[in-house]
Image (cartoon, rainbow, N blue to C red; front, side, top):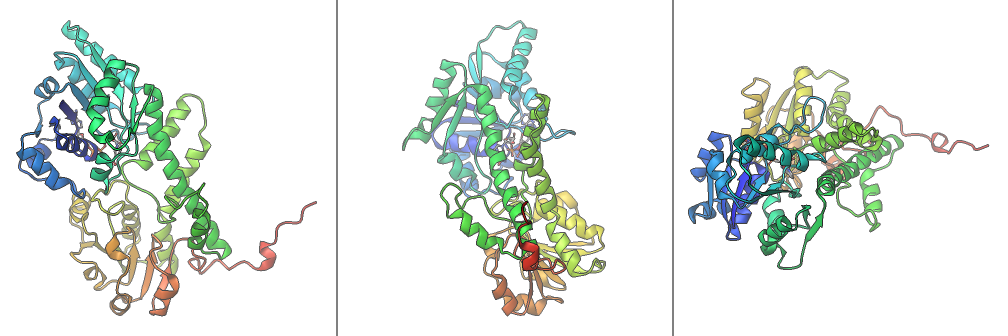
Length: 460
Ligand SMILES: NC(=O)c1ccc[n+]([C@@H]2O[C@H](COP(=O)([O-])OP(=O)(O)OC[C@H]3O[C@@H](n4cnc5c(N)ncnc54)[C@H](O)[C@@H]3O)[C@@H](O)[C@H]2O)c1
């Protein structure tokens, strides 16, 4: 099939490439001329495991191409995907500017029936807005051309995006048109060979499904961070609690890892946007507000622990930081916990020596060259001249480090484990101080409560 994708970011590029891999002829259009030039040169601008060779292979075979021109792109596709960004606007609602710009260009150039598929994460009601925008642009041209708008939210995870796209858990199609549904069923048939993963529903439900999925996952994380903060104060170890509750199949082990907060381009903005959507329909989504607030506080957790370790005197200290990306296997730094930590350390007069396997170029793009940030080529190089070590992203390479080497190089051997990667006793046995998230021993200044303090209040 002939497919067009507007937006060659994490979603658009991965989706376009996977559709080309299945034999479709895919044209990706982006307003970022630099990105398009790099892609045409065989350079993939983002880090995503397995993506680069697949882009090259499909580009060379002629099944995948890139352009900045909307007109030929609209003429190319019998299916036209919108996969542009929907960043938060000033009040946290999703900014639909880019989605509606694309809808307008589709209306300006459409020359025959096409299915317009919204893959961006958008608030409920956006399919109607896209439909109205296309219709208006067609009317301005005096053109009468049929088209359908479908909501097809994307569930891929950065770091596993290619795998998720090739083998999705589910393919949600929100459509009120049987014709459009059949076109998408045909397009997705190669992804359904093992069993049918398609879930067809109405557009509004499809739009809400995406937000509900992300809000649920974010809620699990914030819930666990809440438990971690309680564990820390009552002298319990949240890691033992995690294993204890995860063994219940109704809860499960996934997404209940405590840590220094979630980041990325999706959870923070989608939880916020859903909460704002609820407000517009006079509903106070208290749980979502709490999920957001817990996460905001949690992103300050590592700084709080380091600051407490030094009694507030951080000026002149150097912190080695392992992990800059918002999660492993990506170079994406959007809303990354590392950013909050670095900014807090800099504000307190400390310096940072950081290592990340993939996100160093992105860090330079965001912060430029600065005297209080040194980006290192190797994890152990980041320790040179540093006082303490903070782990912010759980890259596999950080899971079993050489603690003796860390102890010998750091000026003040202490590890601040923002992802609870290590066994506290093992680290302490190696002669390092250990601080984790919710592990009973992290709040030196908070007394472990006495039995009397823990006794339930007497009931009447
Ligand atoms: N990143 C993820 O893991 C993920 C997962 C699921 C859903 N989503 C959603 O998918 C959407 C895209 O996310 P992303 O991470 O791929 O974004 P991104 O920022 O990586 O990419 C968006 C791209 O769209 C381009 N663009 C903007 N306006 C355009 C226009 N008028 N015409 C053509 N291109 C245009 C930008 O230049 C950019 O390259 C968002 O709504 C996001 O919430 C993202």
